[in-house]
Length: 120
Length: 109
Image: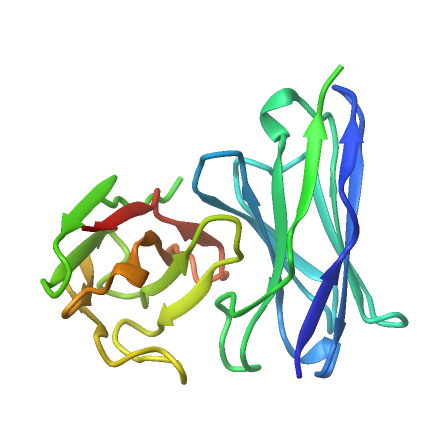
């Protein structure tokens, strides 16, 4: 059974950096892309970027380029999303999501979400 | 940057057919995917590659795509189908850069 377990809720001050983890099990970590998705309270889903755990190659949404870093640690089967220069608008639930197969690249299996609150 | 456009809301009575559209310039070349999200839960994929239904998704969910518009159809909508629905696709650059539509709130009452 594929499982994605994310780290717990965070409270950060404006200007700080947050790093969220997503530990996977039930499949070979390097076989499938890992996406990260933002959802602000009462708002829609926003695609942030993805990483190919096999080679670490990343693609980011233009909106987050320069502030987001997505990485994959193959020794622990864990993906990370780091968001810097936090502002109040970054208060959101962040999801990791992996694809259903090596031929696909859309999100399919989702983590439980991590709430990040940015407040002074 | 690339955008997918959805109507903010759609409302139907139970048993009626609900149709949710998603428009985007790259849809003639790129697949559309549809996610259902209920309050407080992670999204669930209900349609992939324009018209395919994942295992476990009821047959009343179907998808189609023509030109720059993809459509999610729920035939005989049930009260439990009330949720937010998002389309997802990638831009035309070929590098897997994803994008979600703004979401459509489906009300069934």
